[in-house]
Length: 99
Image (tube, rainbow, N blue to C red; front, side, top):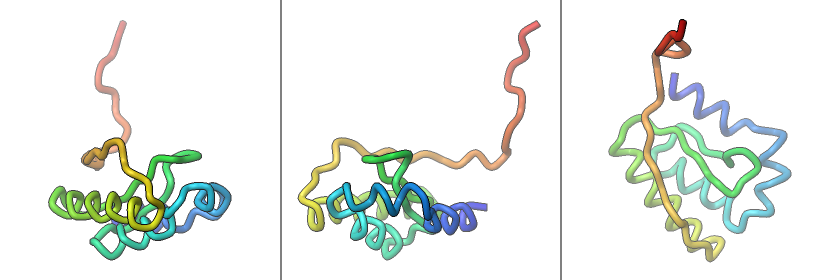
C-alpha cells in the first residue's frame, strides 16, 4: 500500500527531527514533494538522501523535479543524482534456492 507507506514515512519522529535541520532546505524539499503529488517524503537513513513515495512513474518524475528545485531554492544544494524505482508489491519471497 504505497499511500500508507508514504504516510508512515512522513511520521518519522526519531531520525528526521534530529537530521533534517542538518540538511539545508529539507523541510522545503518535503513540502515540495507532497505538493507535487508524493504520498510522503523523508530522509533516507541518516541523510543526506531524500526519498518520496509516489503513485506512478509520471508522478515520480514531477516529484523528483520539484525536490531538486527545492533543494536549490531552499538550501542552495545541487543534487548529484535522482533515481526512480518501483515498489515491490509482492513482498518477501525466495528468488533462488541453493542446495
